[in-house]
Image (cartoon, helix red, strand yellow):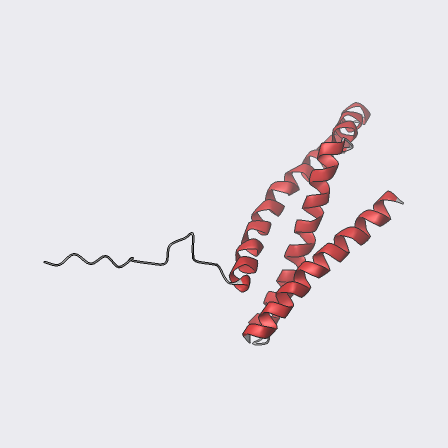
Length: 126
């Protein structure tokens, strides 16, 4: 019996995930966060249905700075998931599998999500 000192797999501290893997994992995480963030929308709709007093309380809570920052992040997540979903539709049709194209479209997804988020919030704030 000999003892072999070779590592069994790449060490997590030296292994770097490919950009396409990061965008794929982020797409799955963004879907879960969207589901959780949708509970805020349900809370708001329930407050509207419950009457003026509950709606005023919900508006005060949802209008606070920390919640608005979370809603800004949630908006980015929404647009990221949307743009990356369109990218996945192209993949389902058999387009964009080349590594260079996949990386460019991943960068375009992030840029598109940032642009759509900023445009949305500029419209909301004006």
